[in-house]
Amino acid sequence: MNRRDETRPEASDQGASEPSGADRPVEAAQDGGVRTALVVVSVVLFAEALLMVGLVVWLIVDLFALEPSSMATAIALLVLVVIGAVWVSAVAFASLRRAPWSRAAAIVWQILQVSVAVGAFQGLFARPDLGWALLVPAITVIGLLLWTPVRIAYSRPEDHPAA
Image 1 (cartoon, rainbow, N blue to C red):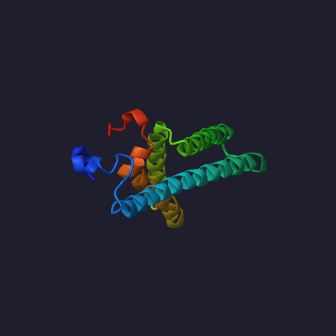
Image 2: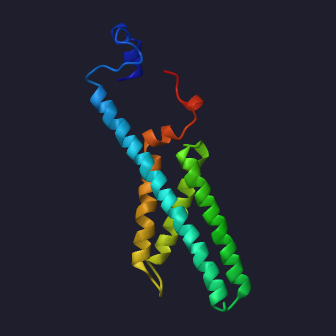
């Protein structure tokens, strides 16, 4: 229903809070699709956060079990991965609250993930399996976060147009 239709007298007879019977199934299907998209975004972000925490644990074990060729580089890599794990975890928890900043942060993380995936497809030590494992969730989350109903779900209530 367009906004112009709401101002017509026949639209106001039904009540502003109650959609017509013909609109209910479409509206319910759209709400279900948006809810599913929001759940998928949150689940993927939490999975990525868990994988980042697992990577931190793996790097710590490697740091103590193996002798790195450069201790400074190994520690710097560990610090960067810890920062990334904390950031992705914060974004994942904020996505549950639909914090407006979490959408932008999640998109930035997914773009970084796409760049790593592209690197995994090329070079002497190419790993296309890892590339696809990074690329598919990243493109999925970017697509869902750019979908208008999901974008609106992440916006502040005062940013919504007046009905």
